[in-house]
Amino acid sequence: MTPLAVIVSGRDRLAAALGVAAAAAALGRDVAMLFDGGSVTALFDADPALSIALDLGVRITACQTGLADAGLAASLLPDGVETGGMVGFLRTHADAQWLLA
Image 1 (tube, rainbow, N blue to C red):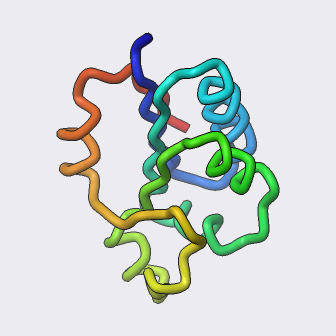
Image 2 (tube, rainbow, N blue to C red; image 1 turned 120 degrees about the horizontal axis):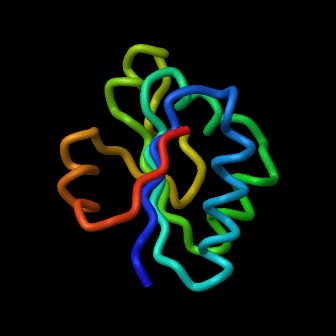
């Protein structure tokens, strides 16, 4: 099954992006998400959909630049959330199906 890579660039489509990612993971797909720019602030909310996605094995990466721009410390990210950047994410998931949210 083709992996799914989701890039979240804002909070307005976050619920839908997490829902699609969780559903794909529940169906056995390999799913990775990159929270880019200002969307990284959503990772600090107690969002049940985020917890469900992580529990289902969705790999979540917080953009280092987005964290720095928002003045947020990577050490405070939820367990299981990694840090990285767009170039590394694109390189790692080059063969994935893409969803931009």
